[in-house]
Image 1 (cartoon, rainbow, N blue to C red):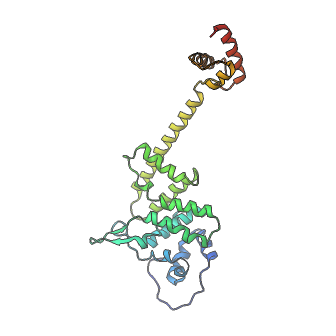
Image 2 (tube, rainbow, N blue to C red):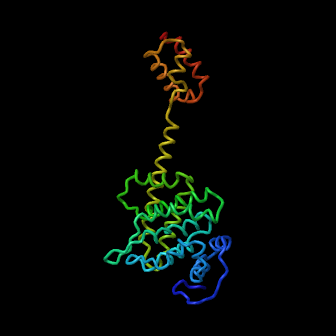
Image 3 (tube, rainbow, N blue to C red):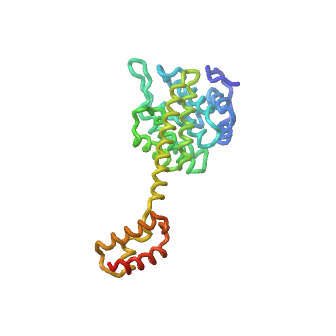
Length: 284
């Protein structure tokens, strides 16, 4: 097994790394074995210089690994699907150009998520032809910091905004990809403590599920709510009279028929017969 800790000094000439070699390695069981070796050999720099540039980018004092080692761990930790592996590979791709070291020795990467998302379509098209895959990865990179920043003070509206933003371009499956990336991102800091971060993600999942249940209950209640099969315009056209208070009386009659179960909420033909008979009796 190749270790990414430490670098060899050598003058060996290696053949250029190809896009196919890289893609095959990315989808392998343990991508870091190849990617880290190619970085040391200098082959990675010629193919994806922005990825190679993460080597030596410190994340102190929050994390001991540099940005490249962390990225390798995240890629190894996530499932081998194209969207998840590419998102893991590029989630911190902008940490080199955004790196700032404070006077206190702290590493800062302001807006690396936004800038990383802008870099995704500059890198991926050399390796993939599927523009929808590029778009999905872009979204995952752009939003990768948000799930791990969740806390109990988030409102329902904030959680809804998050999953609406995540699912905007790729549907509900994007949420599962986003959470898989968040969990792999945390596992990329092992052996540092990650239990608290994983617990936070569990709480976010539970909050989202409670909102989805509430939405489903509200939709079901709306479907079960009795409504008149005929609206006001249809009633006016049926009766051939000028609109007036009598319309409310007709709709009230139809609603009562629906509530009693004598009339289905979508049975317009039966509603027409009932209205005609009722109007004859009521003489409205």
